[in-house]
Length: 360
Ligand SMILES: *Cc1c(COP(=O)(O)O)cnc(C)c1O
Image 1 (cartoon, protein in one colour):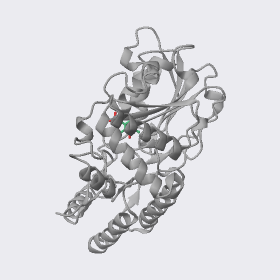
Image 2 (cartoon, helix red, strand yellow):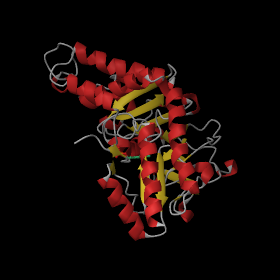
Image 3 (cartoon, protein in one colour):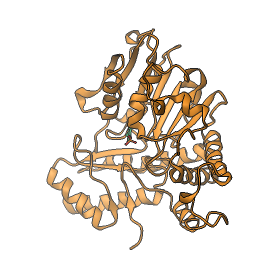
Image 4 (spheres, protein in one colour):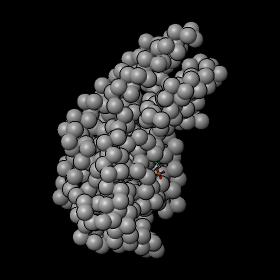
């Protein structure tokens, strides 16, 4: 069977070139006589891989020298605890904006360690917009201010960042990392599970400003202390070696394609194809207010659950898979991460037009 167009929200599709390269190197990595999976993480060969992954990411995201890049495990979900354990240590207060399930989970985990101030929420309209923020509601003594930059489930993204002054801005960038330029200097900490846009599941990337490292609260498990991982070059224990190698291949692919700015152009084009069609369709419509639409995750519905189900089924038969929406939104969601080619989105829209014609 040929490859399908996979619109999964995560783990999600990877560039075919990357998969082929990994397949080529599967049993013998560059003449080592072994797979990357079989290597000691302390070997010179592996050291070169993790260092290359880090330097490529630094180059792609323009990460300044006063930030550490950490390759951790436990998913973005572990960061929901690791962030307060390490940062919620002075006033023991933090501001959170609630823009979806992930933000909610992050806030409720933080509430175990300190005082969470929910600055704003878009819960009233099923998280279909990014709330307008009023800086007078921000806590000036907060240890940090947390946002989810792109909301994977609901398909919204911030287009302007909150002005938090001296309060470090912390962002979950799981589903937006490397899809558009992000000015790292505006943040104290950025984190992402790799399986949306960077590589396979198993590695979580944390980008953290130096001054935020080293203040973990008493009782913090060793493995949850950023300083331990920073001091040991993400090698305090065995890192997820193969997942990091796969990320390295994705970073190489992205660099060869022209980097994040070139990718952003392509992503804007892809999103426009799909949103323009949704705005003109008589049966499908997007669920998010226009100004906050995500370029990565596009939820859409028809007015009938039966028609939604029919669409998902027929799409699957035609090789467009994983289009079922999250249960809290219903309908469909097309995740169109970096690895999804323009042709994939165009083919989906062509199929949607055909479906519309047959089901008006
Ligand atoms: C997928 C996702 C998560 C959860 O990631 P895990 O790696 O499964 O813990 C958190 N935040 C966002 C924005 C996500 O898209």
